[in-house]
Length: 185
Image (tube, rainbow, N blue to C red; front, side, top):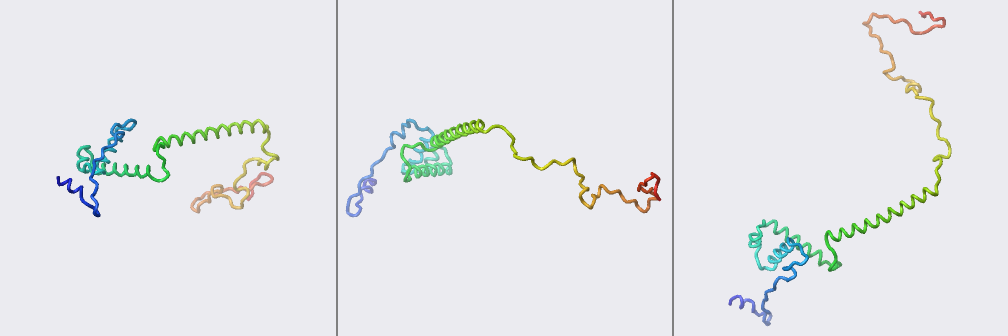
């Protein structure tokens, strides 16, 4: 009785319309063509948002953690906002179905483009005859490998002979050749 009195309060001199319980839409309960898990989650979130049940009751019934419920609620509200924004049309495919359709169209365009380019390559090969690539000969080839020290004044350290140490008693014979083949002193 007290609940009835609270609902029939006058606002600005006019009686306030009594509250009426709004039932869950039948299409949502029957779920023709809807995913069962998504349907249950939607009913769960709507029951909390409508005030029918508290969050504590819902998480106890569904055996969820509080964080999981709030994540579901956030995703549900984000989805509603995306569906209700200006420019979004009712009845269009949303989510993965739309992406699949978009990718199929891109594939169709890519296939058409590929066939066009293959035909262009075929006709180019028919029109352009085989022949030399260069018009004139290039730089002449060298006659052999060049010595790395031939062009420079300084020889590399590996190509020079090691200097004899002062402690070695060996005396080297001169290596300068003479005309008659005798050793030069």
